[in-house]
Image (cartoon, rainbow, N blue to C red; front, side, top):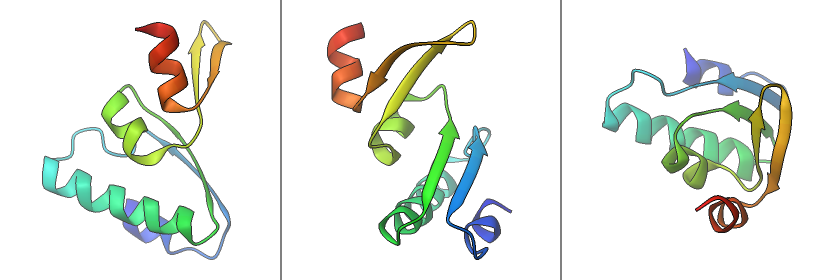
Length: 83
C-alpha cells in the first residue's frame, strides 16, 4: 500500500509511521522508494519513533513534546543537541 501511494501524481505525502511492523527487508525497500520520491522533487512528511529511519530518509527533523516543537534541524543537529 505504501509503495502504491508513492506512485500517485502528487508532490506532497504525509506518512504516519510508514514502516511500523515491517520486516527489515521490506523496510529498506520502502526507504528506497521514499528516497526516490524525494529525489524526484516530492515532499514527504513522516512521523517516526526510529532515529535510524529518520537518518535514512530525512533532511530536516523536529522533536515534538506535548504538541510543541522542542527542536528543529538536521538529523546531526538533533543528535548533537539531545545526546
